[in-house]
Length: 355
Image 1 (cartoon, rainbow, N blue to C red):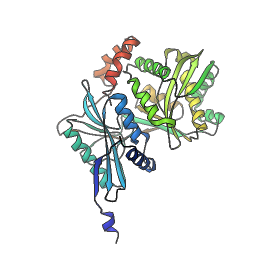
Image 2: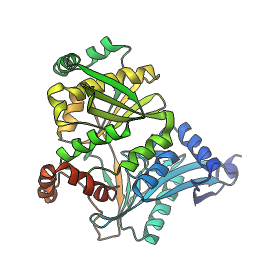
Image 3: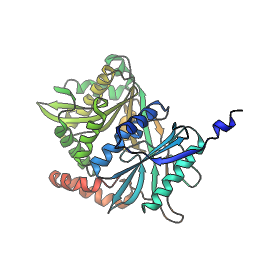
Image 4: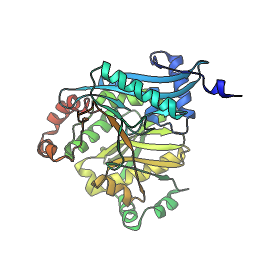
């Protein structure tokens, strides 16, 4: 008897994220969806569009009565070095299709592909979510996610860390580091992060991206910085979402290694997150087989494979941006040797096209 109601058609459109009511309505639906992430929020799409000057296309699926039943945030990425692509979610480690049923997921996937063709974007990348059909290639081995529950207090948290890493954390706590939390000193965070990624051979994102994320997320984002003799040596920008802290953009300077400042910073962030009411710590993604993945596993985080999807025209290879690819090895080595001032000048121009 309910079949006619269940079969009501679904309409697809691009949401107007410039409309405060529309943003609030979509954001509330994402918040209530069990598979929603911070990267599905309209705030993320707006921050990325402003911070990286890349256009947002936020697809929503609605039934005739106006109820939202699906969403897909997309960023139109332009890069003279890496080509064009539609990415969900742009500059995020998650995203992809959110849908109440398989048919809506397929519809959103087809709408994304149609939009990509119209925009001359030969690749669509979905970072997580539902697979919208067999035309989408699956990658379930390149990236690993790391998340676990927070312990009840500092001592229990230390005991939750494997013995060798626990010793490193204990040593870090005796290194005369001060920890500051807030959102005021964006410049100090950016300086630390920029040096960190330069040392890894990676171009840094535009400073506007960090400022816009902090602005759009408000109290749901902050900075935590470790200082030694008042000098910032490690810093992380974190998001807070449904009881989970997401340390997202973090790093340390050359001085941080001897001081074990990253260890002190992440342990302090666990305490800070508990004080904010969080019960879970999401250490983010890392490429399989990298030092970053090993670092997170050393903290007692079990890796979970992340599943991403790509689509490109038949006979055309989807774009691939992997710093571990041998074809980029020369560029990575050269970037590590680049003066920091030059890397900070050129990096944002390159990184805004990575998506």
